[in-house]
Amino acid sequence: MTEEKMSFHSKGLSIEGLLSMQEGERGVVITHPHPLYGGTMYNQVVEALVTIYQDKGFSTLRFNFRGVGDSEGGYDHGKGEKEDVRSALRYLHDRGKRQLDLAGYSFGAWVNAKITDIESMLSGMIMISPPVTFLDFSFLSFNPKIEAVVTGGKDDIAAVDRIRSLIYTWNPEARLEVIEGADHFYSGRIDALKSVLSRLIQ
Image 1: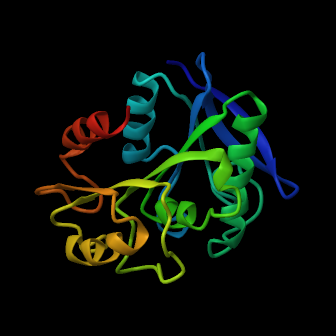
Image 2: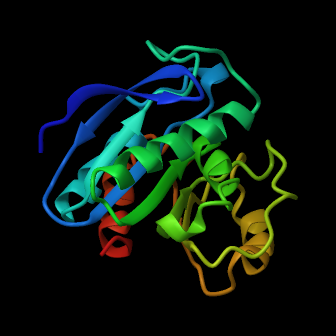
């Protein structure tokens, strides 16, 4: 599916994105890794999420957080970025997408986990390599929207043991998928990630 360049507004800032609209009510907002470490919406893990969600019939919206690429503003330690995610969800919701997923990779998963005040919009959430040894997840308690967490067996930033100890607090029914041999960047393991995502996303 082709994606079109677009923009939406987040608290007065213009945020650039790539949008692919399909029939039906299912849509997903996909978020990228840390802006201060080169993260953008063109990341290969973000690309993998876009591909699989589109294959499953979802409309997809990925975007650059404030201060990244052509998005206005600057890095805001997760606060403004949370507004960017909420605005992206509203954008799809206003265009008839009533069954919305959130999928984030690394920093993106951390920001997505902060979305609790518009849960009624959300059908589910997938977290790819939530950076539990790098960022503070103590704010996150039970969230039934978290359906699955994926990480790599060699990921020090999203360490398996740490995630395993936290996931029962987040949602004891969430699935944990570990891709053996994968580091935080899924170097050489993108195809394995796509295979896991294809099973998880229905």
